[in-house]
Image (cartoon, rainbow, N blue to C red; front, side):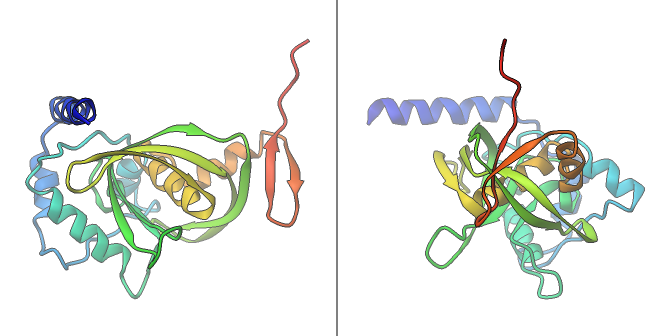
Length: 216
């Protein structure tokens, strides 16, 4: 128990040291409204927005004073009755920081939860094909291949470190949102998968494996 606590404190220290402080622009965007106020969702069709959406995000300090407000406003945004989503990443509201919200369809009540500085540590070879859309890409949907299972490391909104295995549709959402943190959109994945061959192993649930060349 003592070792786990010390490890957690060490990880928090590392994140705090590596994370850069919010810029004045970022602070202004976050502070422009209250915790129940929605934020503008960036659109890939706007050149200025696209620059942010295509940019790589960096970690945020776990003790950043505006982090709670950022999380609350992201939740209000993804729950917009006019355009609801199942997840949202900070770059989509103009903040290139490693913060996402995901609806946990694998938990009772299907709650939205916040994930700070998330990192996917492992991906299964088994793939799942499913239809995806994006709040930042209007009127476009496509069938994307995603890893069926992932292992995720992250911090919760209380600064506690976690690692967990996630499967199925919820794992798809995590991959979609963490892609945003790397400047990757689902349309980029659609283009990438055109160049790779896959084998269907279960047509009832659209499960695939990538065809890999055997070593001679």
